[in-house]
Length: 461
Image 1: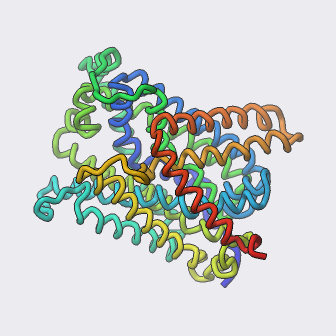
Image 2: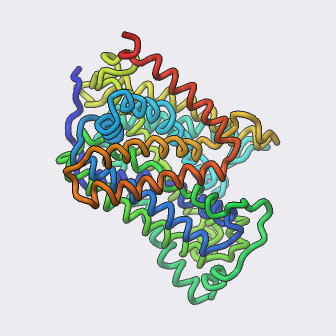
Image 3: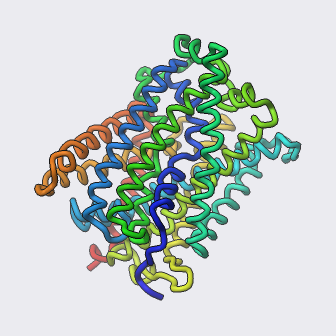
């Protein structure tokens, strides 16, 4: 056993990790959500995608500057520790290990299962009587399988996991690129795209703050990029390649999202998109067979994102233990010499992700399906963690501005301040969108963080 991870990833893998983690299921199913939030207002939907992308890019660039100066284990923890202090770095590491990474990873395990089952049932595979591919028992079992499979790949062969991330990133860009190009052309020729830009749809229950709600909806589609910083200690020439990966990857993501959204708008009317989602646009343009094949592409896309998220999850407890913090740092700080992975940390990742999967399935799928909604502690675990991740970014950006007096104006003031404004906007958007659910989430967040504080080895001394 050793206590250090070796450098095994190059720039292309890092870019694919940024793009592959962010571009997953969100762009496919959040397009419909954003139309619903904006009442079918297509220009407002594009504005929401642009605002969400601008916030992501500002934060990416600000952190890329930090990546050129700070490098230890797990980028975001490094930045929190270097700018605010060691205790804050530990709390950031505990948060991403117990809440942020596993909550998103569990949702992606379900989404991978969901789209796989939608594809299989469309080809004639039967389900249990009365079941469905979204909330049925088959979906839960398959979600657990995908979660364990992603864990096994990342734990036993991290190099294979990196190659898998590269492959799935390329694969998932195929349907997005096709829809962006063909959909826009089809929409211009047929007049559907022009019609959607000037036609609104009557949607019941539209938010009183539609732009805030729509930007909040984009957050899940844009989230996850920070996980790419978790491999900084395993990235060749990290101080140059990590900032490059964040910048290049971020630009690709925003461009793909906006053009894809416009392509979908060219493939079907707003009314059809609100009812049936993006698949109706694919069916209109490419036919029923290729329209169903979309579900297979989405499943592969989701699994690629799941793989990247699990990659970050597996390193979570290690990033805490490598600094001598948290429970049993000597146990969780060990790296297996054969696999070059912190296996004990990986086990924690699997267990915590499984817990969040059970919560997500119950609070967001099963209980709403049987008519139980709006109860305490029933919150959206795919979006609510943004209220804390962006809040926790703020002190990092502020301290960077205050401390780094040798940095040029763009690096010290412009980008970090823009990132602070964007982060604050995300927090406000989340509060406006989720309202009381924010309170229930914050209570759970506080309990988990206090537990982390009590389990810190330095606190117990």
